[in-house]
Image (tube, rainbow over all chains, first blue to last red; front, side):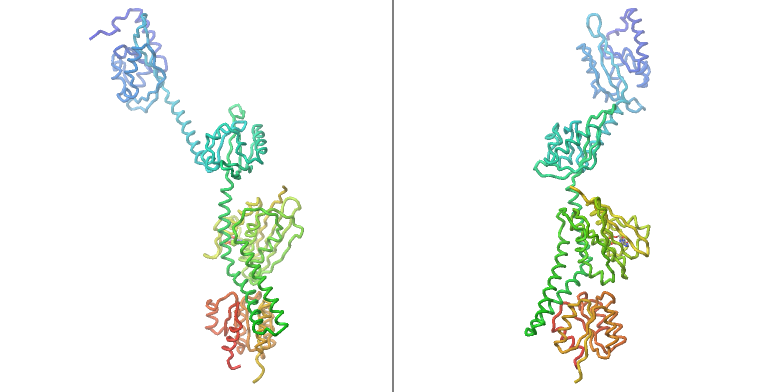
Length: 494
Length: 128
Ligand SMILES: Nc1ncnc2c1ncn2[C@@H]1O[C@H](COP(=O)(O)OP(=O)(O)OP(=O)(O)O)[C@@H](O)[C@H]1O
Ligand SMILES: [Mg+2]
C-alpha cells in the first residue's frame, strides 16, 4: 500500500496547513478535506461536533466510513468527489439531509472544492457543509402556507382573481373558470373589463382607477359576460395588495355569483309558498264553495221556475256575481302559487296588501278579527317582486291571525317619508312574543305552534324576501297586549 | 192542516240567504233571514213559537254555528236544525258526532242541489 501524502509534506506546507486547521476550526461550517484515496485528511471542529465523532474516528477514514450508506447512495458523494479530482471542476450547491445518531435530521448545503497544486493537479477536495435546517424549515412553512392559501382559493365557491394595478388578470381560480367558462390561460394578461357586460365596462374601468388610487370597493353588482355570451350578475368586492412600502402592487377581486344564489332563494321561496298554501287550503275551500253554492242554487231555481220574470233576473245576477267572485279567488291563488319570475315591477303597496287580504279576509272575519286599514293613499309606487312581496304580507297576516285565536284587531298601515322609504305596519292585539323569543322568531324552523301546524319558516322567508328587496323588518311586542311588525322598503330612484 | 211552520235562515252570506229563501218560499214556506249569529238568536227569541226549522251556517263571524245549534236545541227543542256548510263534509267528525248526538237534525254541504233540501225537509218533518 502507498504511503500517505501527509508523510511527504514539507515543513512550510505543514505550517500552512496548521494555519488552515485553525481557521477551519473557527468557521461555522462543517468542513472535511479528502485526499485522492477519498480518505479524510482534515475534519474541522464544527463537523466533529455535528456528527458526534472524535478526530480519531474520522481522520484517515474513507468517505464511505464517515457517512451513512443511505446518504452516500442518494448524494453519490464518493463518485462526485472522484469526479472533482478528475476534472478539477468544483461541484456546488447541493442539499444533503443528515441525521447523526440520536439527533434530529438536519439539512446541509454542501460544496465540493478542488485544491490544486503548482502543476494544476488536484491534490485534495474540500467538502464544506452549511447547516441550513432552519432556513429549510422556514421555507417549508412558507410553502405550506402558500399551498394552503392556494387550496382555499381553488376550492372557494366564489370567483377569486388577482389583477395587476392596471386591472390585467394574473390569476383566475376554479370557481372563476366554472362560472365564466374561461380557463385561466385564456384570460392571463387580459383586462378584467374584457369579460364585463358591455354596458358596465365604463363602471368597471372607473372602479379600477379608483382602486389604484387606494379606494376599496365592496358588493358592487356587475354583469359578467361568459364565454357563451350569457350575462351573469356578480357581486364584486375588491381589495388592494400592497408591498412593504405600502405601494399598490395588485388588486384582489372576489366575486359572488348572484344568479346561483337567487336560484336557491327562489327555490326556497317557492317551497315556503307551497307550505303556506297548505295552511290556507281549508279556508280557501270554504271561500270558493260559498259563491259556487249561490250560483248553483240560482241556476237550479232558474231551471225549475223559468216563467218567473223577477226571479229569472235575480238568478242570472247571482250566478254572474258568484262566478266572478269564485274566479277572483282562484286567480289570486294562481298568482300566488306561480313561481316568482324574478321580475321587479312598479307596485302600489296598498294594492299588493289588498290583494293578499282577499285570500284570507273571510277567514279573519270568521275568527272575529277586525281589520283596520290605515293606508296612505298617496304612497309612491316602488319596484318590488310583487308575488314575493305578497307572500311576505301573507305570512305577516297569518302570524297575526294565529296570535289572536279569540279575535282581536289587526291594523294595517302604510306610510312614507316621501323620498327614501315606504313603511308597512302589521299591528295585532294578540298574545305577544316573550322577550326571550324575540331574537329567535326569524330563525328558520323556530315555531311555538303545535307539531304539524307551523313549519317555523314563515318569518325567515319573510326576512329573506325583505332583504332581497334591500329592506328591513322590525318587531315590537308586549306579551298579552300584541305585536307590531314594521317592514321598511327603499324607494329607489333610477 | 194548519199553516206550515216558518223557517229561519242564518247565513252571513246575503246571497246564500237569498237563494235559500227563494227555494223554501217556492216550496211554500214562510222564511226569516239573519246574517249574523246575534241577529239569528234575536229572531229565534222573538219568533220561536212559529218557527219549525232552522237552516244554519257553521262559520259565522260572531258565533260558532255548532254552539248556536246546541243553544237552540236546548231552549227550543221543537225547532229542527239543518246545518249548511262549505267548510265541513258530511263525513267530517264534527258533523257525524252532531248528528249522532242529535245536536242537529240534518246536514247539507255547499254547493247543494235543491232536491237535497227537499229531501232533508222530508226526512225531518215527514208529517208536515
Ligand atoms: N304576530 C305575532 N304575534 C305573536 N307571536 C308571533 C307573531 N308572529 C310570529 N310570532 C312567533 O314567531 C314564531 C315564528 O313565526 P313563523 O312565521 O316563522 O313560523 P310559524 O308561524 O310558527 O309557522 P309557519 O309560518 O311556518 O306556518 C311563531 O311560532 C310565533 O311564536
Ligand atoms: Mg307564520
